[in-house]
Figure 1 (tube, rainbow over the protein chains, first blue to last red):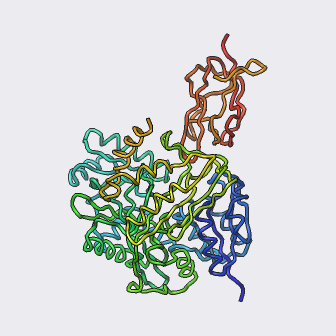
Figure 2: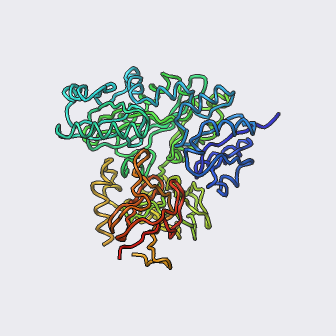
Figure 3: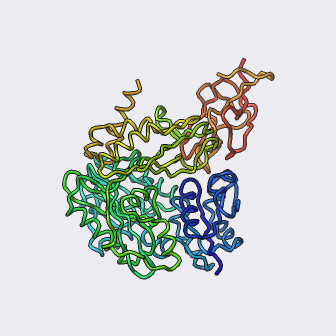
Length: 455
Length: 88
């Protein structure tokens, strides 16, 4: 029987991750690359490489037609979009459906529904998932004032058409409302082509807790546990861990149940993540959104369950039923992931591209490094600053943290600046060790303290 | 401030490998055209790395003699972006 072929429509560490999973599943592989990634680790790993354009993402990785054409040209049976780029663009699964190509992700109609944040809230409401009090789409500023009457300050504007921190503004003071509305609308229009906003009650001192789910084409959806992604800087995750600590078992069960209820109510048929905010002050949890893709931080869930999420994602896409029931999913130990980025922690985390002169990753039983970088590799200015994910595991959180401290110290990267000094500072903070933090903690408390420490 | 080159022109150099943009955002006018008067603190272009933007200043009083790079092109650290003819 002819071996099936998967085209990976992404780059960097996730392309390497997916290509390795494909190889382990005995699948042939194609990688699309921009001109900047022709010499990448992914290009080396893939069986075939198709150059689809110049470095700028909108001329290569973001071009649905070019990706589809590459798949047709190479006879690929399936496309894996990774994360970012086209991973949550419904035009890609739609084009796959039209061209008889398997999309390794949810059906296009599911992606559309969940990608519209207002529709996603409506689905969550139907599935009895708790969420912050909020509005439908706001037509004009008059609507805003009416909704704010009902919701009460502080409020949070969000874009209906997308996330990632764009089109978001928090408002405490009524006099800031109009300006925030205008700024958020403009940002949403620029980022997503759609200025529609909605508004929610702002959750103070929130922790970010999310659920990894995976579903198949037969209606089964299971979860692979919770992750805590509270340490964030400007809405970008810095450290993630599994399982969360300092949350009652009851609360965790409710969050897991809600996530599975929501995703199974619409027959979610791939890997995905349901994100929640948990109020530190009140033990309540609030639905935020569903990410209809494999996420950067998926390794921590893999490490505590032994489940290979990418392989499972590929197999369910090809029509296999999920090989596990919920009761087969067991959780052991603790896993922490640090995102290692090419950013200069001394210069407001400005990206630091360049030639990597030395790259020695830590190794050991409880250490996993997902990366596309190596000594001699050049990080260009075109994409994102993630150079590696450093994951440590242990029987307890203390063990995993101790291993992380040593691993960060052993990770030798020269030629570019990295955020490793900042990570080392962060994991020693008493609040982090006690897991007593919220999503604004890094910005409010850690960054000033870190800046002081550099003086 | 970089020294004048053999033609007496002062280069505005890229401080970092990045993408060069002539305008504040798509659809807006370029910061400068050849022939424009600039001073030390005039913003002449943007450099982008991974969605982070930095303004580039002329660093000299004079006129923009020549813009050397196309909008959207990648530039390496040290590349000359434009040449300023300094005021006497």
